[in-house]
Length: 94
Image (tube, rainbow, N blue to C red; front, side):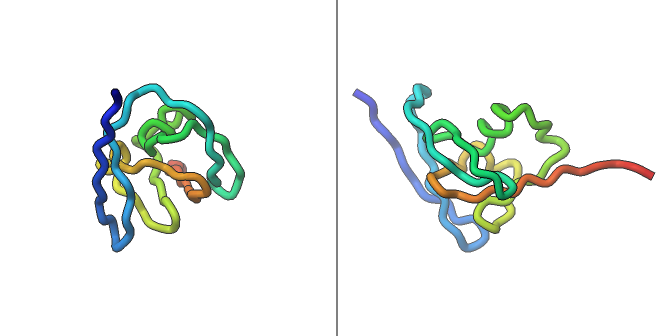
């Protein structure tokens, strides 16, 4: 039997669902990443998505549905169908 523990966290006046889930993920969902439709596994967190996409977490910031999500909260933000992410990377130069 799988028991899901759900709670809600409020980040900058928006609510995100946090779940402790079985690591087996089934199915796909579609979200927007930088305006481009992208299919991801259901119940994926921002932290998992960053790893899946091979992004360097030290050089990016993530905005979910127009709200900046602090890196320390990435593991707790479960993405949902139709979410919109903006991923901004820092580039050095001179």
